Length: 138
Image (cartoon, rainbow, N blue to C red):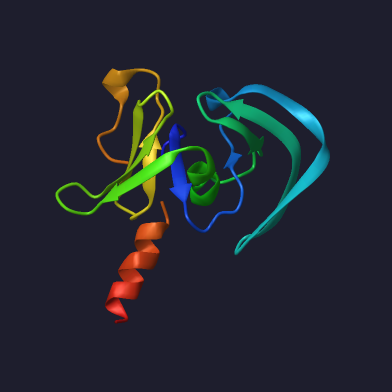
């Protein structure tokens, strides 16, 4: 995993980032977000702005940068293709696109590294694990 990877996750109900370099305007808020997962729970009172997307929770102890598939779909069109290239494509209002491709761990991600020469050709989201398991079980 790279610090600049952002996952799009169909199992997440919130947007949560651990890399402050991907965010602007990190600030403390009055509400508390408690995140529960198989590793336990964490709380945060900080939010930031992910440029081009909007407000996300910030938790420096989180294990990755995660966008909730459902929350992304509330503000952006999402297309999926499995023929040829396996990917999710998020279409911004200005028609620019962001591609999320499966990593070697079958998580859909996009690498938001600023230097294009360092950008990985692979991308990551948990949805593939779920779909793959469903196909095997049918």
